[in-house]
Image (cartoon, rainbow, N blue to C red; front, side):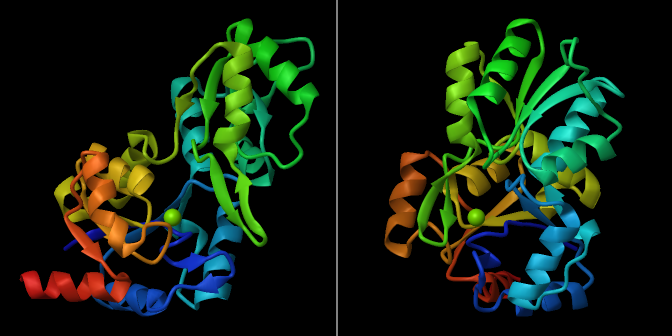
Length: 264
Ligand SMILES: [Mg+2]
């Protein structure tokens, strides 16, 4: 029985628009009893809010237990390295919530935190950059929720967590530990949660650089869907450039199930 690691933006929905067949795909795998997790690099929302967004936009079933965000994975990583560690965070509600839920504590004004954890922060300021830089210089470990440079917004592309990270990397002279896709850190955690052998797990997504590269690095099966940022006519060339192979290339999620059923 396969398990599924499913990307959200460009795979289940595009912003506030459902991707056709997404809800049908989820009901088919649910009926077949396959476990699944929605795994997202988006660090800004809490898992319950992500689930609510999936249900509202696509009509597919989703609960907080089906969600793994890069904020949760970052918090788990930090708590695993040092239980009860202190942090300084540059991020939004989803990141603060995940860190505190994992038992981590905000740094006190006069101390250096164990971790600087950075995600997307639409209230990013010079003051936050200055604090984080000083903490990293004084020994805090720098974790980055996700490396995405850009994200889709209503009026066009917007800078993502990776763009905020560019300033902090430059100022601190330090490369962060990257948690989100394509890092195996988040995908290994997803594999652990699904509790299945890696070659029974499909990593499904629209982004070759994050979903497919991450799935390959985590030694799972991979399916590229052409409903997001990768256009059909580019897919082959982009995979070749990245020196990656995707087990399947699918028009959309229902096509993925069709191709699988034809294989067996
Ligand atoms: Mg995507």
